[in-house]
Image (cartoon, rainbow, N blue to C red):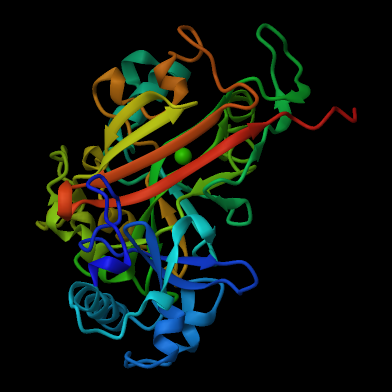
Length: 396
Ligand code: CA
């Protein structure tokens, strides 16, 4: 079987991973696949020939939602079955089911209903508070009591490789008291991860913190592109708007939570103790090394384990008022910064708000990568990249 694909020593896509995505090849429709080494297993084709205990129609869709909606028991079993088949010499997986990744186009993996962005790294929130408000009171009084978040925009979330147009917007020039409308000159990335909701909850009901992981299908890398000058002028009092929603980029493969189980770790100690509905004894973080490059130069090395608030706490808080979630909803972590400046997850922090460096230039390419483990146990996320296109010429 191993003749059918090659798993390079530093491959993100080992047998321990097997993430799900949507791919197409020349002349064929987008469908569900699994990344393995340098190939994509055409799960739709394999299932059509039989072998799974569910209706293969859900694999012939241009998004993962209907497959995910079958539930973790079914999707987890399908993944374990594939894992066994890819290890065995005698299995239904044949060369025709394995597509070379370079011959495939990868698509946005989920039809995203609602998108929420949290703000869950204490280092990031402290750094931003110090720059934008008061260095002595960088964290606002609510921050250690609830996972701060806002509702974002799903329509502008794009997949790895999609170019991002520099947005135009209202900014307040230094010293001015009226704004101008111009192309942002403070274009930034935000190093984030996002989880895909895998199960509907009921409107009016809450998801308890100890149930929350049942509602999380898997994770991807996420770049919440930000126009800092637009953001700074517009965000009072209702929060982020056009400085954020012009584009966000996600990686094409959704790594199921099961694949990340060996890398589960405890998060930072929470002090003061959080309210009972957010309390849990289960370690809720994952040791995932993250890296950002700008034009192939590494500008940040961080880790998902630094998050102050876990995904389970984010989801429990999100539903604590009865707000329901649906399969395919996306919830992003917020910028993942570490203590050391080499682990800062945005140029805002890395350059001290532009004092010691520049924001993004036209034609810059920003790429996020991430992985847990190493060797045959490595579980990686592939690539989450995008290149900046110049702003459209002014029409004003
Ligand atoms: Ca963000």
